[in-house]
Image (cartoon, rainbow over all chains, first blue to last red; front, side, top):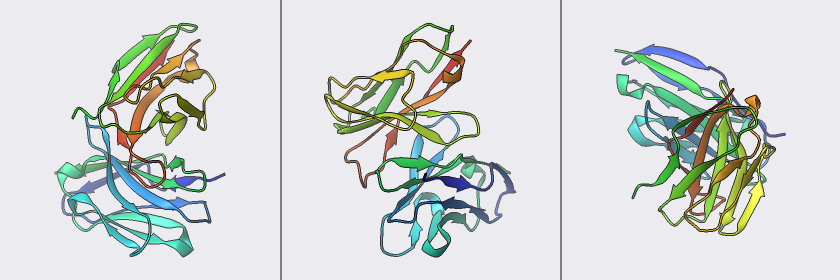
Length: 112
Length: 113
């Protein structure tokens, strides 16, 4: 069965620190990859997505993610986090049956 | 546009009771979804719909029913609530299935005691 693994359930960083959130998936075919974010009190919303082409994709608010096919990974990065990045981040993969498979999420807390 | 709206925001049910979680979208999207999120777990797909009158099971459909009589509405029905259905329920919609992002509602927190 397809699965998505997010390595860290909770991450605490200080402002201006660099961020990398891991995401690995288990499907070997063509995939569409997503990172969604849920800010406190807000709806889940799309942060960025990868369908094809350049494996380094840029999203909103300075986030980026790199698709490494050989490692089945789609890690999320930001060079310098802000307090407003405090949120829960979800990685999701669309595989063969067009349904999204979701990771468990990573709660990110940024200390001011 | 209100986007995707869900009611209620929070509900406590007794075991065996039934209820309907409402979901409405005003974006004229064909595809709609119901997910549940348990603590420490990713979202699991319960049911989805590809258009009015067409629904299909997702990964965890047992204990739930859905209907889609209009493009806008996609209610989720719990017939006999069980403690295992304590969860946060999210409704989402998308214009197309394969490559479009999903737009989410705010969620319904359900507690079954």
